[in-house]
Image (spheres, rainbow, N blue to C red):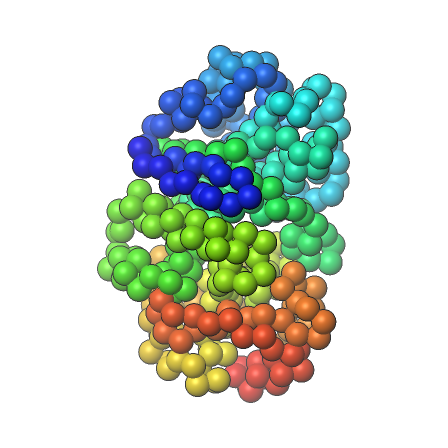
Length: 345
């Protein structure tokens, strides 16, 4: 078992390893009342196991919601808050998020708001959640206008990344997480990118490298106003693709396409050459991810008007100078429209 410690507004540990769930919960669960939040896919796989482990430390209630992004709404959030109240959780008790990114975001948001804040323990069950969404304290739900437009920063009490939980993932869900791993390589580690490029990277080592990179960004910029924005590479256009598809396109597939869009825009600006984009597209294809989108990028710009990274009439984009090297650039929407139209004419 490997441990990474995040020093943010709250200091907490991330445990990484195989079959570590029991020992990690014994170390970090605490005592009292627990609410186990999970979805309809994960509940039959791991619900009984985690409930049994938590019962050694206190009473356990459960909240299970229909799996999928369409459940990440204010309606589900409200139901979860009412459940926490009816279960009698107090400020000394714990919300346990068992699942992928939707579960972690929803449970974390509820924990941050209930009684103005209770503990949340993150137990990610997907690759994407392990290397990205469970770490760093971003929580939230979607609004009709766009993705993750309501939420808070609320750091977890701990993150338990047990790689054994990935054994039940559908291939498509695992592939979805690889988009975020490729992203980490593109923004800050040519070595990591190369490991993925060569095929069959060591899973635990890859997870550790991704989380360690995110840890550094979170420690430097917890509130996402500066360098942490590098983690959004591929996400602005990616979120627009998700929304335009009615969330039929998965997060990882949308981010993969969004990274390609960002690289193509970078080419037009003279920041990188086509070799960088070609290398990215080849890696995405080798992972089973899309290297393009059916939605014309120029038509997605208006959707970006509701992106969280918008400020006034401009938005911060993460652009690419080469594998492992990205920059942040503030760009007015009029300029972005012209650039996108020129790039994808």
